[in-house]
Image (cartoon, rainbow, N blue to C red):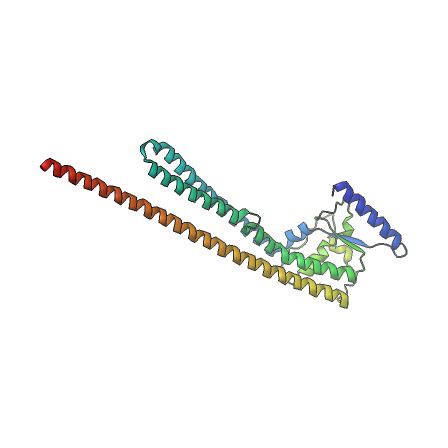
Length: 278
């Protein structure tokens, strides 16, 4: 769906709703998810730690790639001096290392890699909490619509007084540490728009049911993410073990061939010595 289509659809829905609720007026608000995440210290700190991990993973991949490239260069330089058997062995070893590097890269940065999973684990609990707070505020303050400014809905203009992000942060602050909303000297905090409004803590049965379902869904997602992570770690260990076994076998075969050639060479030397003695 194009941006223009989204805008037209949104405008159409708003005008239809305005007609339906003309008697009491339409109450709308929006939240800025990016702003909320930036102000949740737990998320911000965890994101910085994840970024440090990402940099380490990139360095490790670069090191593995450098080793493979150097092995390729060495093989090209020494190829004329090596037997076909040794060339095949070196090429096989390079292929094993190259495959391991690609698998490692996928494990870290692939569609189901550590980066995607850890980002999801960081953001999902906060998103669930935001959803719960939005449900409460929507019911208690009788909003008809609450949009997410950072989502796909295109907002060409938004008045700050409709932004309830700080109100959401205030709700999140009951269980998480959040930063104080930034407040310029000539600008009021977005929380000021809600001062004087009594925030009802009463939750209807229907809302409570939705919140319970949301919590259950969050727990299910968390369990699914943990299971996926466990399976990936298991698969990674199996691949690592298989790689070590292949490498060990390759080295053993190479050593056996060397010993066999050395034995043949010694045998030929003994024959030459015996012939010379005769």
